[in-house]
Length: 233
Image 1 (cartoon, helix red, strand yellow):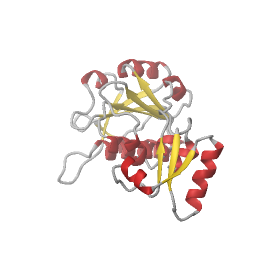
Image 2 (cartoon, one colour):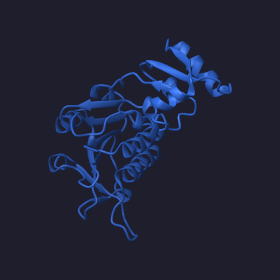
Image 3 (tube, rainbow, N blue to C red):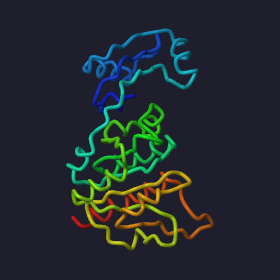
Image 4 (cartoon, rainbow, N blue to C red):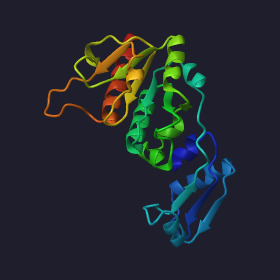
């Protein structure tokens, strides 16, 4: 919640704090940041928070978040930094983990298709440890048209795949800036999306399993892009 208040681009609607909680720095900061953002704070019986969260571990405070302020694709392109595109990823935990990695390496933002895709939800905010509040996320009607626009803006289109035709990401010189595509769980990139890739990249696998999940593979790829770009500076 603190990361949401520190980084939120639009305020929460309301915050509830359990009556009788022991004052500490965390609650003091929540009240202070909420006041700065004109977010109402109410002290209510703990039972009310239990009911609101279906007895989840709310730790004495609950926030009613405002709708997430999605960015335009142009806002991401203007950064000139790596952009992550998710081709119909479904799992909020995977999405949150990728957002956390994206923030850690300082990319320009994340692109999601509007339909049949994960979106920014409270579960994603939690899975990202609040990192989603510091990353630009754009929704697009059509991922292929977004890729056309990125390529026209000078981006190299690279997709992650797990088949034998993919190039080893660790032995490939990656151009910049890169638009990295991570496909959906179980299906990978759609054929129409893959056909737009100038680079199809893979992670070498030397163990007993043949692939990593989307979040782990995407995180490794983002860090390899980050490593190569930092070495080139």
